[in-house]
Length: 208
Length: 208
DNA sequence: CCAGTCAGTGAACACTCGTACTCCGAACGG
DNA sequence: CCGTTCGGAGTACGAGTGTTCACTGACTGG
Image 1: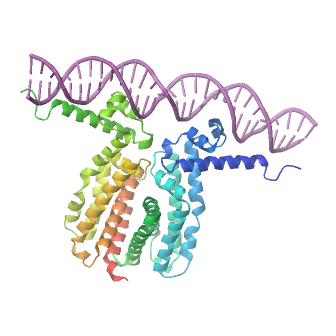
Image 2: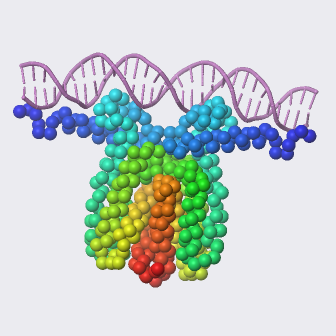
Image 3: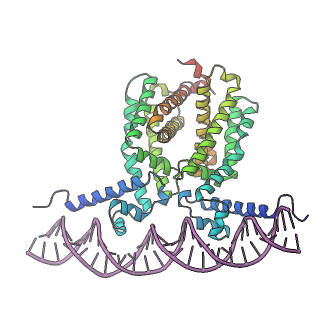
C-alpha cells in the first residue's frame, strides 16, 4: 500500500492551513484582524483567494484558530510554575520570568491576543475570553491547594486568580510595547506589582 | 455689525466636526478603528467624502480626537475622588461607583478606548497611552500626599498609581462586556480586587 | 459694498475587496 | 486499475475604498 497512514493529502492540507495562519499572524503585527483581508492573507501565503475557503469559512474563523494556537498550549503551564517549590519571592520572580520568556519567543502570538482581546471581531473576542477564564480557574485551583489559602472562599480564590491573569496579560502588553531594550524595566515593575498583590493576599483574612 | 463674536462659520464648522466624531463613535460600537472607512463616516454624518478632509487628515487623526474627547475631560476627577474624606473602604466603594457611573453614561467612549488601547492604529494607541500615563501620575501624586504613603519612594508610588489605573481600565472593559444586568457582579469583584491591593499597600513597607 | 476665504459638493480616478463559477490534476479507496 | 474525491487555480463580477480636482455659494473683514 503506497498510502501512508496519515495520508499525503491531509498532510499537505494541514501544511497550507499552517501557511495561512503564519501569513496572517505576520500581517497582524501591524494591523488588527477586522481590517485583515482574505485576499491579503492568501497573497502572503502564496495562494489564490478561493483556496482560503477550503480551510476557513471566515477571516474570523482563522482568528479563532489563531487564538487556539496562541493560548491552547499554555494550559498546564500555570500549574507547573506554581507547583515548584521556593519562597513566595522566588516563585514570583519565576512567574514573571516565564512570561517574559514566552513573550520574547512568540511576540506575534501575544501581540495578537492583546490586540484582539477587546477587538471588533466577536467570535475571536469570545474565544480569548473563554481561554483567559480557564486560566483564571486554573490559577484559582492551584492557589486553593496551598496552605496559605486556608479559610479562603472559592469566590475569593477566583477573584485572586483573575487578578493574577489580568496582570499577566497587562505585563505581556507592556513587554511588547517596551521592546527588547525596555524589557528589564517592565519586569522590575511587574515584579513589584505582583509582590504588592501577594502581600495583600497574605493579609486578606486579617480584615473585616 | 451682523457678525457674531464667535463667527457663524467657525461655529458651523465645529458642529459638523462634532457630527463626524459622533457618527464615527456610533460606527465604532461594532468594529475597530482600523476597519472604519472614511466614506463610511461621512455617509453616516450626512456629508460627502471630500468634506472629511476639511476637519481631519486621516481616520487616525479622527481617532486621536476621539481619545481627547473620551479621556481629556476626566483629568482632575482622580483628585476629587481621592480628596474626599472617609475611611479607605468608603473611598474604595466611591471610586468604583464613579467608574460605573461614567461607563454607564458614556459606554461608547469607553468601549472605544478599551478597544483601541492595544489596537492597530499607532497614533491612537500612543495617544491613549499618554493619557493613561498622565492618570497614573495624577493618582501617584494624590496618593503621595496621604499620610499612609510616608516612606514610599516616588517610583513605588508611580507603580501603585499605574496599578490602580490599569484596574480602572480593566473594570471599564468588564462593565461593558457584562452589560447593565451584570454590572452589580462586576462592581462586587472590582471592589474586592481594589481592597486586596489596598491591603497590600498598607503592609508594603513591612516587607523586605 | 466687495473681494477673498473656505466648508462642502459632485464627478472621476485607480484601486482592493469578498464571493461565485468552472476547471485541472493529484491523491484516494474499493 | 479506475472512478471518485477534493485542494487549489483561474476568471469574472459588483461593490466599496481613499484621494484628487474643479466648482459653488455663503460667510468674512476691511
